[in-house]
Image (cartoon, rainbow, N blue to C red; front, side, top):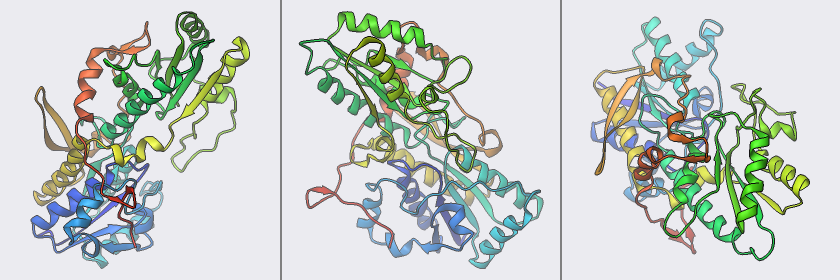
Length: 409
């Protein structure tokens, strides 16, 4: 019998990660769970017993609805890498001591690749040491790079923001076309997978000409090709807008942002911090052509914009959390909830669960066949895939003229 559970958030937040927490909480209460704990600051906070009872916040349905309209990680996040249990068994013993102390039957973790690795290691340790607790992952990442699942909660809202912002800056950049055009380069998150930058292609429509080129880390970046393309564009256009992923790199694997600065810090998982690719390219074009250039880095804005979140994304994040709870009640462990697309028109999905060992530490990239390499655009296959994910809106609750959020005490 599942009486007490705990849920945590990890990695980079999204506009809908709190909807996954909402889904876990609501489904658990429907199934008779007595206590739904939240770990504050992920597994790192859990190790310090930084734990709260979510009933203190969400027995009130108004707060529950407000949670789905609140960006970032309500519980707090972390980038904490669990060691291999053969290297540091004490950490795992402490985790299970805390689980037993609070009589917790199941642990849910919402996150991306590294978070799913945490679930994998905890489930494996439990199996090897006859621990009774169950472990379930709930997908989250604007990078959309988790395998198996059709897409990840957080991605739809992020590309809705990206495409909206691109449309707006295209209009802005086209305002001053009487003389030479301004070359605007927009940098979008994406280390090794360009899913977010693909979203720039959605800006094109009856009222918008769209971006002039899209550069993804799935393909090597050719500086000479880039310069030639810019020169061709400025010869015929009054405005040039190009979208790039932060992780674009040359054929030798060197990040373009390192052309300007190669000294980069790394995080707990060994990931080199990336930013500045747009500035680097804008400076190169300005220096070599004299053209006016501008660089925009969307940065964390693209993952925090709940005011323009996709309703589809919110509902699927909530549904993924609920599916994870249902799976645990069926005795499943060491798995992740997945969203499986059934149909595009009308758009429908099913929620399933899948073995975490085939998901953790595996990175799904944009299919090469969806990329129009010659024109540096996305093909129709991507547009058909992405368009349903950005549909619908959940109106913010306003207070003093601004969206209202729920904040942990």
